[in-house]
Length: 335
Image (cartoon, rainbow, N blue to C red):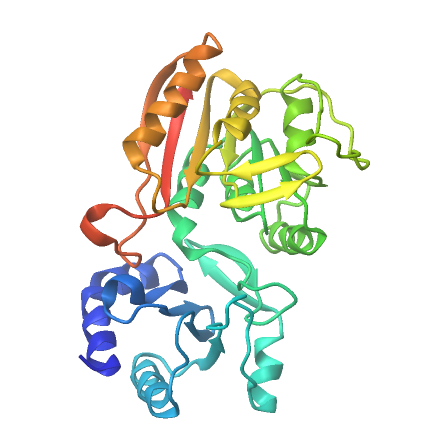
């Protein structure tokens, strides 16, 4: 099938979702998820006043790009930006005309369920400052944070923390290693009038988590530990754990395939009895039930229990093969 046919079909399947988005003050969502909808590596999203077209495997021809832009224009005549990220490092590699480049590098504001978020389609990082497939996670914390203390780990631009604060949390701590991401998080808090609720800590997750859990801060073998912010042991009503697939630092290794427990254990210890820890794993090869069982075993080894759990499934603008979405999110209420 042609790209035009595939995109038209995808839009038809989203008819109800797009109508609901308009009613719920949401102008950021995915309209084409190529991996599942017929063109691997092509994603098309709405980010506020823009359509963002991205390729991760193969560059679009000019004719293909024109076809896509024409269909999108007929839905809504927004500015359409094309980011070709098909090179091996996923960096944007194509030039834009002057007007589009200026627009792509300018700060934009979009809304998700009435919550405002800053966005920039091209910047020093790679992504447009909000992961749209995490909408269900933001909705969960917004609905479950009233009068609670919230810890947002690997916070990136603090979308989760912002949703928690808007949802009535009394204290939100966002932790991330990137000063650029945290600055966007501060902007998000300001856009929604909740800066006094939110705290932003630039830190490697390992020392932050281990201190909060009351554990000794250590590091990888023969690695000299750099300075890190000092924190006191603290437990939270709600902890959100959304680590990257793999990362290394002097303090430890993030590995969602082989050692999720290395992060989960201290995060769980920083969760109050009766509190909830929301765990995320975005690796497709990690089987959902096996991962869930490993979380339960880790809880039991610490003499605690999982009182209840709730799976949070991505919305229909992020379809998956046979219901097995690479992004797995489960909320565990701990005894």
